[in-house]
Image 1 (cartoon, rainbow, N blue to C red):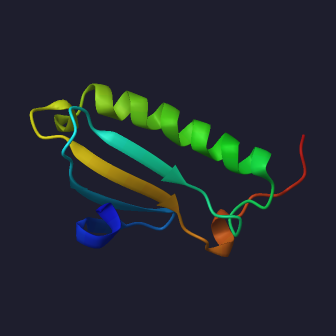
Image 2: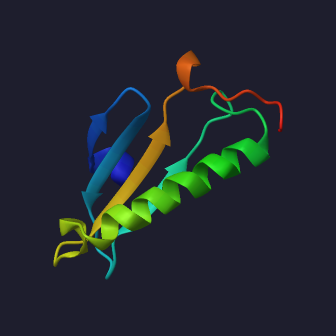
Length: 88
């Protein structure tokens, strides 16, 4: 539903697509492509980092108001955002 009827915002590292939700809470989905990080562990780490940032933002945001949203947040597949696959 968000992909079909939602509005989008694009930045250099992320794109966001959102639509007014029908549920009781704002829902967020995070997508990290294998083009950005080939290893699942790297993709999961990115998702955890994005979730932590969103938690802070949503606590003090207007998104916690009466209108609830469905949001899909995705990393772009630009070369500048790709992770080095080596673990340190």
